[in-house]
Length: 590
Image 1 (spheres, helix red, strand yellow):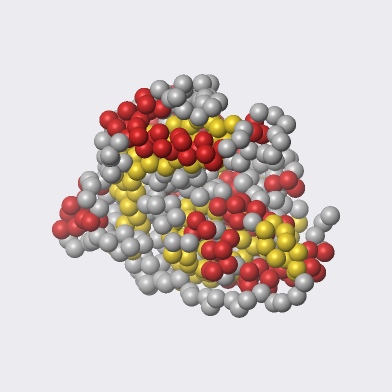
Image 2 (cartoon, rainbow, N blue to C red; image 1 turned 90 degrees about the vertical axis):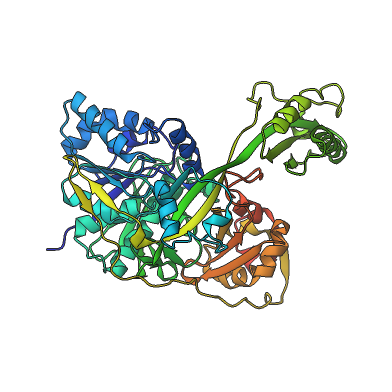
């Protein structure tokens, strides 16, 4: 008998997300499974350092504060909780949850998924012939030249499904993929087979939409001005049917909105192209169709899937030195010259240190004839990184000695925390490892272990190649910001920045496609002049997607950019002025 659609509600999109969210969601509409995503490449780097300092922890400790007061409600309602808050020690978090439930007199079965932590196996894996090649460059891990302090393989959702099938009420995971938090429960609920590629792919796509919480309900959305309740957008719900068709919605009465555009924003977020790779399945994002079926209800259909790739990603992190950042301000006239003087003084303070990277960036441009002091002010950000902390500490002390011998109006924000000493710099290596080399296990509350087999079928998956468009059609145009017609969302995939841009108006799609050629993107973004640009089209979404390889250095945890994980690249592009056909410009709201 076909079961009704499973209702899966997200309550966390990252480590640090709204701490009241679990209570808020439980007070909202009924759901069958609650899922929380806490891990990202950037946050894994932070957790790695914490785990190294105290191996007994390494999990998201505040998850206990979130779930503890709600344990009774979870048990009473019979809903399941799945979260990757286990970080580097899922067994430790599972045991802490069992103790917390016992202390509160609540009977809940807690299982955890393990096997993702392959740090201790790296030498053996390399000896067995696994190069742990870099995802982008193909270089073997041995070329990195540093010793990793963390290495976590991305697991799929079948361990979660097995734990739920065995009766677990709470499933604690480490580094499963974000979408697996949703795909695993959907596969359990509907009893899918591991070779149900289309259904699994559909659940992965739905999971990708809801994994970042309010991202799907108007948070971080370029159309934010039209979002009701934008002060606190609610968390999304995915209703996934037995055939994989999904409806994205949200809790009634909570802030935010669910529209085709808020869903599209998440579909193009942090992807490498139309082939969305998961350890369980490859989802073909270019087959996704969206249909609004009611207020705050968007249906995802048409998703097709194929076997997963033979490898999974391993997120490896290693210390590569130290870094420090300091900020000061330039006000009024001759700001460029003031920044130049600060840059020269920073160079003098560092001396001959070719091993130190330094970046001095002015943020903002003072207004002409400013009305307030702050309209006349630009921030100067000084960041330096190197193998040893001593020259960086000397730089900080030297900057503190410039108050009487630098630019006119020199000051720092004394109420803000300034760096007093260099801190460790953590680098990232996205490695590839054969899926059969990754142990994937479920540990139930009684200690029973269930092995999760690798996929029975895999296939090499390459991104499609889309031809470059021709030049835009001739005709009268107006100069307008690209954002007058297009939405955008951007993010990071290791050292790559990705950005998707799309138009709500179907009439504007041919124009956007022609405008956003690879050359067109480079013209709009001079910073991308020297990086490899990969371009794809999503006609069903009226979107063009770019991967800017290497724009973020080797990763968000180690580059010197002010926007280290590329969150604002899309908004920058929307601010650029372009030639818009007059018929499209005339249709814009005045």
